[in-house]
Image: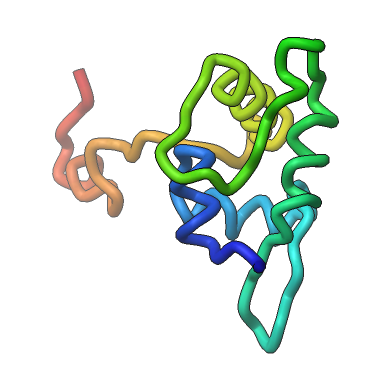
Length: 109
């Protein structure tokens, strides 16, 4: 069975939007089926292992619901570090998205 964006996002503890961004930049292996993203469990398992696996981590199994371990968390953290770049990732918006306070003469403290 293939994983949906929602299913894989839950397993990796990331937002679905992050998976879409990674797929758009070819940072995660995926299948595009009639415009839908799907992920092969074994391919994702191998992809996570490519970020570095110790002998302790080799029992990793993708797809078991609600199973979290330190080794899985370490692999996910490593994958996130490799996939995020300085130009793409989580950012904080400015105090105003349109900059209206600048036009009014207000200054940010």
